Image 1 (tube, one colour):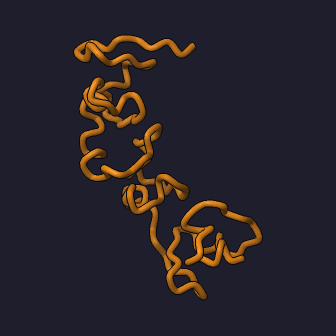
Image 2: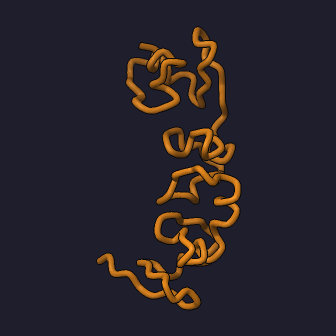
Length: 125
C-alpha cells in the first residue's frame, strides 16, 4: 500500500505519489527534500519564507486561506499559518494573543499553544 516509486528527473527520489512532485502544492515530508527537488520546486517559497517551520507533512496548509489553529501551523516559525491566523488580544491576559479568543476559559482545555500557555492563563485556568 505504501510502495515508493521512482520519480522521473529525480533519480534519488522515491515517493508514493509521483504525480505530487511539481504539481503546485508543497507537500512536505519526503517530497520536500533535495533528492526530490524540494517537491519539484513546489516548496521553494515555503522553505524560503518559513525555514524553521516544521509543518512537514502538510506544508501546503501554510497560507492556504484557512487558519489551522494548532501547532505547528499557528506558530511564529510558520508565520502564524502563513498569515491565515489572526493574532487577537484576550481580555484579562495582556500578553495573550490567539486566533479564537472565545476558546480561552470556555470550559474546554485547548491543550496546545498559544492557548495552553502561561501568557493565556493555561487556557483560562
